[in-house]
Image (cartoon, rainbow, N blue to C red; front, side):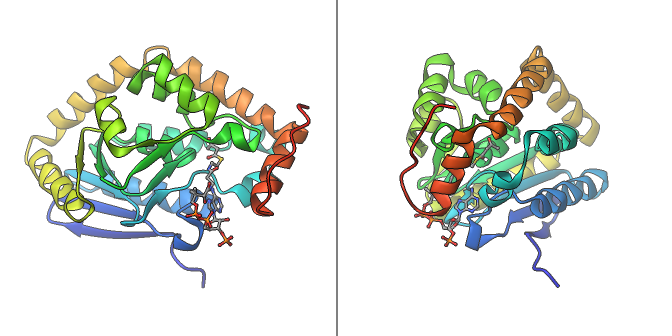
Length: 258
Ligand code: CAA
């Protein structure tokens, strides 16, 4: 039997989901996405749960789309299956507040998954980045739309066009995360906050979350649609094949700009 890609537990009224593919730095395989969405749906429907925490390990949150899987995806398959939109749509459909606790890398789709959460707490070792440009593709799980809303155009463009990362204190000062704490304290702090939120009226909490999201999402739908089309189109580029191949072969990519 294959190992579970997530670990799930409950602390009082809080549902905890931990990404659990340590050998692949919690990369977003289809199996992980399915299990994550299913766990979120179960917690969301459960009246005993008032808030959800999504985290990785103390070393890594998530290194993004599974590069081995994405390399095999043609434009047509990505287009037909709406690759990664299911993750975005699934998170958007959760009524209960989701607190992301980010330690270590939140890179590519990992940074995008973090930004799908409602509140972010980061450990001091957190690193955020959108390195897709180095692989011959673009952020495809909301990054081009959400990063600009979170940290503004210039910083978002800088991250997306250079692939450079930012650390936890830069993430805090730019507004990407709500709090930065020592790694051994950040999870407990998130539990405290989740406990507080779970103590409020569940429908009011859901309404507050929905209203805040509405403000963020005006225009987001068409932006996400646009982003998906371009992201999937990048799969047909020779440079996409080169970038993904080079990563897996541990060599520097040779771009041909086609
Ligand atoms: N998918 C699949 N496997 C991955 C992975 C990913 N995204 N990231 C890392 N791994 C694997 C590595 O291949 C390696 O496996 P092996 O031990 O079998 O060689 C293992 O995880 C450990 O990785 P490293 O040895 O590279 O670890 P490191 O600590 O030296 O570096 C890192 C960490 C900087 C995050 C580096 O792993 C890295 O750059 N990973 C790729 C990150 C990335 O480019 N993500 C974007 C993916 S595309 C995307 O997400 C599109 C989108 O918008 C949705």
